Length: 374
Image (cartoon, rainbow, N blue to C red):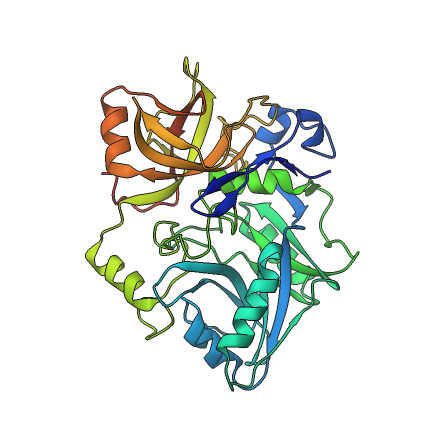
């Protein structure tokens, strides 16, 4: 069984936020010890939270070029891009992974399943007279992730699973040898990926834990319609926005903020613990390098954690002053919006950040550039 959502939600500016929560016995279909997860080098997980749309027609490339943040026109056949859909004011609407098929005008678009009705409506409204066909193919297609830091393994898995589409995850920071989240596979319904015996099959909870550890957001959980600003969600560092392609909906705010460098908040991974502090582990704003032996998870990750995780939407505070907001949480990790300057000053002064009775330790993913933390 996969992770459950809380039955209760908390309101945040009109949007309901949720948090990954489950009892330890429900987290995995198999009982993974922390030692076992710590040594894991490759795994495959179904992603039932994701859906697949198919776009085709003679104007498809032009439409996606005009409506999304990345340079779709520059994508080669059988390649993938990550990008966002913005409103005219430059605020976030949806994100998606767009896979360009062999045909120049056919794309498979992977997005959050909860967003499908609204995204379909958005496409139909904004395409006007453009010749673009769109259909939801999720009933016939499943999305899987293969997590590994071994490039040759990822390449072989992509090659073996290309019946519909298979790709290295395009949320791939510049200069990194492999994507933080491995590969994405689109498989026929009830036809699991073709993988080697040394790749463990797990449920999606491990995928989402690693996604949080890497500081990569998820629609509806860490990104909120008409509220979020994509540069605060690291789209620029995840190769999710082009600053050279020309005009697209919502470009003005994104481009101006990029060129002025006025990004005061960022989504960051956080380590959660008791208020009395952690016995060991990284300090606030440490850059966390991945294990040298190729393992997927850093040593501080605890798959057996029984923390009563803080609710999403709660403020993160430093001696009563708000310095951030908690979003998704899982096991002993989470992802949060952090006001970098205020949080740095507080932690440098020895103040523990707190949320819902837990200590919060913001961490810098290994793939972040040096700015703004040097």
